Amino acid sequence: MAADPIRTRALFRVFAGSREPLPWAKLGEFPTPVTPFPGGGGIPENLGFVKRDDLSSPVYGGNKVRTLEALFGAALARESRTIIATGAYGSNHAVATALHAPRVGLSARALLFPQPVSWAALENLRVTLALSDAVQALPHWSCLPFSMWHHARRRDLGGVTLMPPGGACPRGALGYVSAAFELAEQIEAGVLPAPARIVIGIGSTCTTAGLLVGLELAKQLGLGFRATEPALVAVRVTPWPVTSRWRILRLAERTARLLAAWAQDPALAVSAGQLGERLELDAGYLGRGYGRVTETGRAAMRRWTEAGLPQLDTTYSAKSAAAFLARCERAEGPTLFWSTKSSAPLPGVSAAQLSQAPRRALRWIVEAERNLPRELPAGYERLEP
Image 1 (cartoon, rainbow, N blue to C red):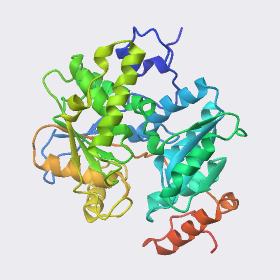
Image 2: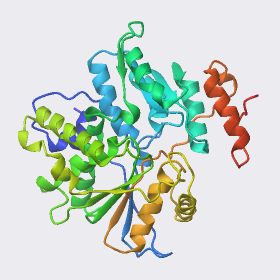
Image 3: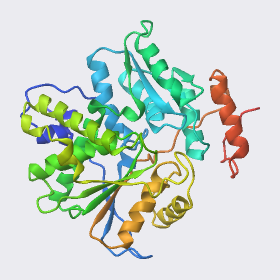
Image 4: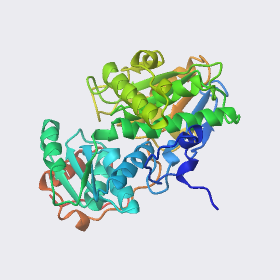
């Protein structure tokens, strides 16, 4: 009999003896590979590595695939028919939900608020509007809490699961607890040396919180990190207080408690104090704020392309990649960059597919197309003002 594809996730391998079921949906292809970053240009050979979560799915990859496996599994277990993503117009979480939810029989919806203009945000928004069953375009982020409260109480959608921005909740963070165990297994297998630090962009905090828990438990279990306790360098792409230290560690601690309850092992409930010892927050690459382009990010994008790695985006991955390159140049030991932006091409969207989209979102798209300092790509259908 073939192995259950869900039970091949690293989380279930590490806790193979757990008696309690943990609902999970299969969306991604794991483990994702690790690529050495080419030496030269100020970076010593064999000191930089890239964890390729951009390849987590040919449908749409990136970090949200792991998060959605846990959240979709929970939604299906409670017999929800509708899953609702929340976030900014260019949310990777929302576009991942629109593309992956139909694969497991869920209806995808989204509650979105405006953000600064960028090509990544424009592409994501067009796909989210075209492929979601419904999108509510909010006038401002401050309107999100009430809209979430209202949608959570709707009875006409056949059972609703409402996800916080980025899926930042303990259940969603379990996807990256599993990812940390996966990395530890790759270190055991000799794929890469145990890194002294891991660099990742932090937006909603879900990925960072899950990694904090997984890295700490892998160390305690003697898996991969026997002699090394890697620092987790979280590079802010969203500002305080969204990425406050307290908020990250609080989510990580709640995630550890959920894991301990599932595995029936109180020792797994590591404290925020323990988890905080390996967390380093870096606000030096945020620039003027979320979604704002930085020159250091642009430079990182050029170096990434020259290295033969997939293109970065200005909102998320370029800023964290700039931090990674700076640390590699200081040659302070093996450094791993966690690639969280999907490299799978997004499906094309015609103007006709957007005809029923909310007017507020369409006005944002028209303004973005007018102001972005680059020609529209081949095959792109501009909206009429």
